[in-house]
Amino acid sequence: MSHNARAAADRLRAALDQHLSAVEARSGEHDPAVQLAYKELRAAAADYDLALYDEHDEVTPFDLPDPEPPVDDDDEEPSLDRLSLLARWDFSVTDDAVLFAAASRAVGEELDDPAIALAALVAAVGHTRLGTSASPESVGLRPHGHTTWVLATDDADPDDDDPSWMEDAFGGAEPELVLCRVEAPVEPDED
View 1 (cartoon, rainbow, N blue to C red):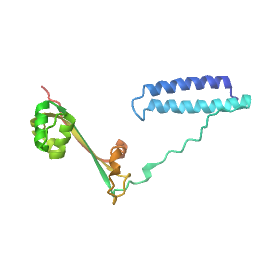
View 2 (spheres, rainbow, N blue to C red; view 1 turned 135 degrees about the vertical axis):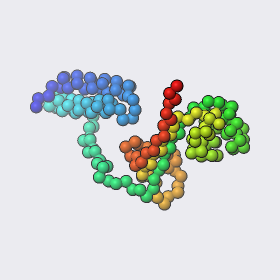
View 3 (tube, one colour; view 1 turned 120 degrees about the horizontal axis):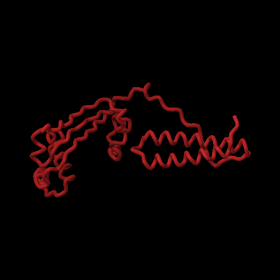
View 4 (spheres, helix red, strand yellow; view 1 turned 180 degrees about the horizontal axis):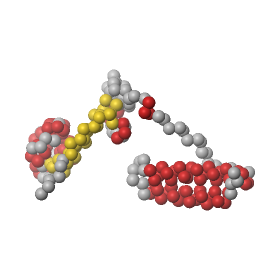
């Protein structure tokens, strides 16, 4: 196969622009457009490197090691010796004063920050009690539902009580790793 260094350089410049545009517009960490642009950029760089060598006996400073083959995690069963329970409960603050008063009563000190007040209430009464149908409104909150995920824990040994896992407690919370999922959405009022 004959390689044209000039055409390969044009393709590489276009791939660089395409990759930058995809990165600037990405929608998340694993954006498919960025992944596609990366693959095209990698292929264009390799093609340019080969064409430059074929035509001019010259190399680029690019070091393009072979991509690692994907690890097939489907064959490996996760260990169920230690499990993580991740919960998300969403609320809107409907009345700051009621929230602050309820949280202050629960912890015995004056609170005036909505996030701290909510955390104090959760610490005092728990997610479940706070999320029951009558409780949220009585403390100045409107519930939007909750979800709970169960994942196999791979960042801590079953017998290890070291709290260092809390530094990145939700780092492994990938939807595809969830073993069990329970959702309780709040149905919108149909007025």
